[in-house]
Image 1 (cartoon, rainbow, N blue to C red):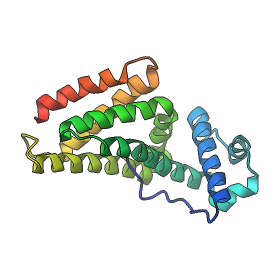
Image 2: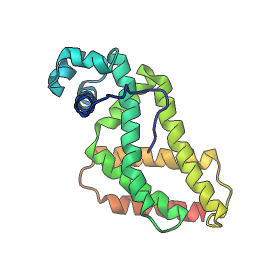
Image 3: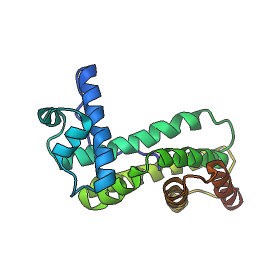
Length: 202
């Protein structure tokens, strides 16, 4: 589920203080939308939670809708930024790398449970960003699989079906063991899921 949306763009602050303010608004929005949903949340409640003036909100976001779109892109980017360094340090093969990526995502999901409500709502509030989130995630998975195939690691030619199937598995494992269950051994969950890939893709 690691991705970056191309449609929800952030206004880049020019100062460190501005970056901190924007980050505070995004973090407050994640908590607010995660708890109440898009329609029950308000700009006022978000700025109060962020500890910033209402006027500061409009320096960075045109509307609640614009904030939500930016948040989808931001959360996608945070998943990517959480998973990428862990994958970068992995020295095993392509299939094992998918298990590493899954475990990293599960840990992110457990610490950021609001991502599920926000991404689910994005289908209706920000459909282009919702689509971009999943398409980009699947593309990243497919690129990793294709690299593994080129290295002679996979016994089949990976395509979009394989990438979306892996992403679907990851999403629902994150829901079950990241969001619903705070006690499951995430390493064990990832290992069991990866064993399926080993047999199916090896």
